[in-house]
Length: 414
Image (cartoon, rainbow, N blue to C red; front, top):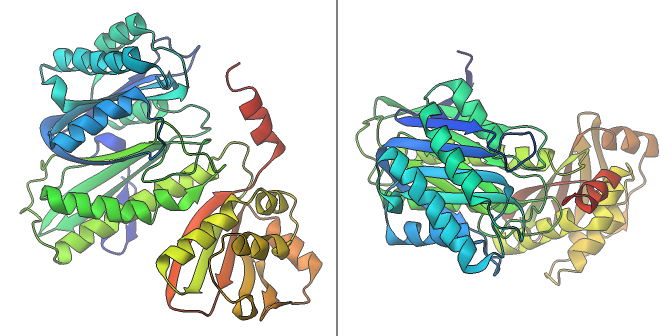
């Protein structure tokens, strides 16, 4: 098995079934024309769960069902996910269909329906084809396995306009016991999270107290999924959930000690990796833009300024056109009404081809246009903004805006 060491943890193969006690499956049941469209994740032991959901007022019925279970403190044992149909804006029928989907899976697994999350992604405003769903769930359950092939099928079945699967697995030693954490995600368009983003599922066999799982997960969400954007659109179906089933049998993490920090650090790596993967796969995107705000007065100011840059259509199109138009960046920052002194600001572009300062101390800096073009021709570019106003800093990720994005979304329903 290939491994890559990263501080206190290793990146390994295995997918969502790598943690002990997890099985998965994914297959085509007929919601989409050809591609896989139903996934199931199952834990042999009931798992403690933490989740975050979209703040979009128009929440899809499946999210309402999932929120109910998570808020109740229920342990979760299975998740059913369909793609190709968001089951959003479908009213009571949509909610009943989500509950029915959970119930069918629960019956097949002989577990409680109140331990089954039901999630959907795809076109808004279309009812789920329930005969297809019910039969599809029944046919999928016998395919649940704990091998990498099943994990890959599951990761593929949750995709919509994505062009590749997004998955990562780490192992980390906790109190002498090796535990594993694995995540899968989908997302390509309608990406501008607010508490969560798209669909993200994290499985771990760690034994941890629920309050600490909640704290580690939700604090890391703010530094990962909540710092990405593709098009400034917050979906009706965004959610992220983590299940911890304790099957690794490590001595429980019940206080914020070095073992908690090791787990939290590994979890953060996974969430940032998945978040960046979503942006890399942004609809029509040709570039990953990493924006770092440094020297801000406080974290919230830094967050607002960072997102303003990454969400600006003028900034995004400039990067698509390889145009070193730093004026669009400083303008996007000023439009937020966050107080900062432009006379102290410095803007730098960085890529594998080098780095170049474009704006400093309130004035333009003469720069080599040919070098700027080389830097901007790379598919990953860093924008560094130093405000020299304080100590706060933050990093976010976005994509450029292309002709292909318009085509994909103009033809989405067809």
